[in-house]
Image (cartoon, rainbow, N blue to C red; front, side, top):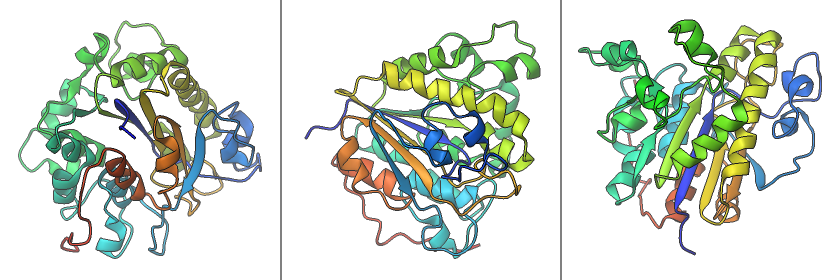
Length: 311
């Protein structure tokens, strides 16, 4: 089978499969469609919903730096480091992301790949200073690894990229931009049209994890409809004969607000479109997602000889 023309890979920080208990799981209260399975409800499609183990054979609660390294490189960073590492990538994980990010691997094999998130001029100036590597998230390394410039807010306003908040609420509050609130479903449709211009396009949404750490039902009530509506628009716009949608997370969190830390729950992997069935059969752990995409595109990469200094 020929690979899809385009893969739209959406990373949603901090969501896992939880219980139906409305006292702890905001998905049980506020989810209306695609997120109902995160509260023990049936998945009604379209496409496939499977699960991935975020612990990846390493004891302890899964964390962001090693989980995102796995999602973005296909390398089990937690096993290589001997532990789960939180926050932004450490000194030892940064070269792994720079050398082995899926965006770079696709690019090295002749495919176009990009991170669709937009950044403010303030942030770009901040991360351009000497010794600023520790300020970059794992997703930022996806773009840095390609050598391509980061998208800016101007790119978003002109329709070339996406912004992390989906509805413009953060842009309006933080930067006081005189722009209207956006409809999540319409943004999802627009996102597919942008993503379709690349062989691989990645988008990160992280307010889910922030709401989980804040143990805030109020925040969850606001953002769950945002990201769920966004995904509904993505599903509606995406041509399953030409594109593949992949949606996953690095660890659980928002599905259990009884604790401000991450959960050990398995995380969802939503697949829809060309190659979804083939990819779904190969996923057990987070790091299997990039590896399955490499197989789909006939990209050969040896993971057996990789090693990094543990620090």
